[in-house]
Length: 155
Image (cartoon, rainbow, N blue to C red; front, side, top):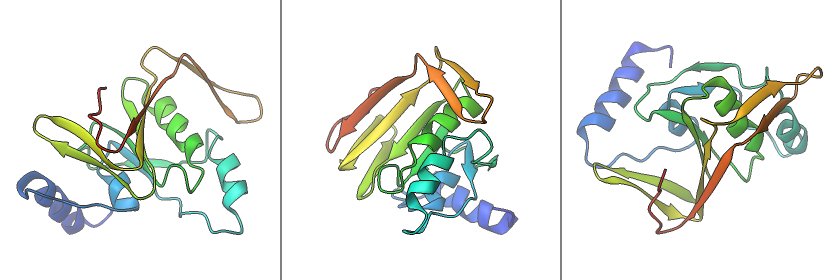
């Protein structure tokens, strides 16, 4: 993301190409913010899942903003649910979108749909969020919508 040429190429591709496939970190980069923290390895997966609920874990960086939300790839298999809530905390006025493995959020001029297993949309616009004394994220009033393959995303 620090390379201006990379930013330009990805932005141009998304804006001018009929179909763009993104995976992993590139998926996250399309959103308003992304975390450069590496995907957890199998030996640290559970620890990383717990750490993702800490307020200081994501270390957000500005994304390309081509999707007006925080986008969290590998939501389920990397235990990134905490990152989804961290996205709400970082930008309470935006949605956070979690994409499960073997899934895609298909965007078109008329809306969005799910291809594959599932996509989760977390809406914290009416929620209350906080950081506990131990650095853990807290939230109440978050609305979670889960969309299965073939469904239109309604948020």
